[in-house]
Length: 200
Image 1 (cartoon, rainbow, N blue to C red):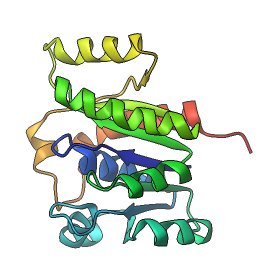
Image 2: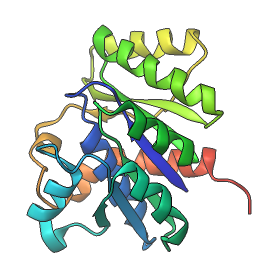
Image 3: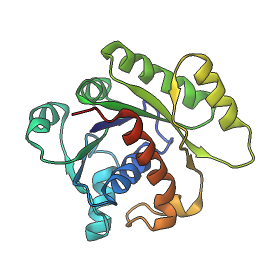
Image 4: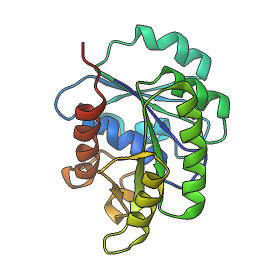
């Protein structure tokens, strides 16, 4: 499965979602490649991998959109996760076109949701399956539930799994992911593979 993780807005945990999902998909021994299309940015997946070294299970590679398109058919992996750049619509569109599933990272704030809806429309135009994953959620706060309901009312899919705002997740950048940090990403990995994996 090729999963593009996308957002046109920074600060919503897109890269954390991409790295966490890739690591969760690899936790059962699957071969997973994480393609970073935003390696120029500080705090990218590539930065994370450089700092973490062997503490990350997945293979992280950098690519431009053109390089990605050429490389994807040659990558021998069970899953490929593409971390898209927020400020490069053409690269994001190319990743969406290549993906089997687009996960749109969105915090529960209205500005986050407006950004998510833009990506949702791009994916819908390509007929690529797309779902929002809510990030930076807080237990006991109604914002995430309200956001989920608003997106669902508009006809968009929202994953049941969410990525909570926890200090240990925030501090995981540049490190391997402990079982406690990996847990919400593992729930997401199980959900999307069960829901979106194509029959052979």
